[in-house]
Image (tube, rainbow, N blue to C red; front, top):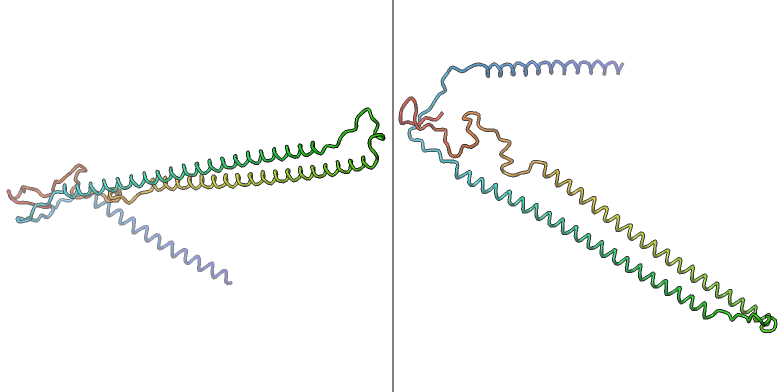
Length: 260
């Protein structure tokens, strides 16, 4: 029951809106036809005119036009100066970012070369230590049981195992340090690339905003005047400069001034 009432109310509202729209359409159609008929009809009555014998002359527009021209020139120069300054700032920031990135890359390369040299020195020292503590080999022509005893052989084997364990631990430590430093350099370079990518994206977005701002209408005086149409009564020419709409002589009374 409630849904049926809501449906009936909605239908009544739709019918009322439809009647209102029909009335508005009929009214607009009548107004448009009246305007077209008025435009098509030719006026036969003369326009009323008024005689001003002591009316002063209309001042020429050349002075105001010169003032407007100066203002327009100042606005255009100011806009160009602002644009050049913004472009110079953007170029300076871009060069600064490039210099900083080059310095960071040079520091990373220098650190890499230094660490590489340190690793080479460590390997060299380890090899020298291994050669220095290398066990004395038994002469090949003499039997082992005549030169060395069993205890000495076991002792030397134990020392060799200890040296091998020390060298293996040193090697593992060096490899761990190297992997950690490489991972650190990789993460740092990745962060720098991310910063550079974000800076490039922000620069592209700023350039797009500047392009959209350049395409959008600005607030210059000569652009503000474009939205105002010309006078449809006198229909002056665009090249008119200082001319007046006052007649110097009337066809009714010679010597008088007539303004329509």
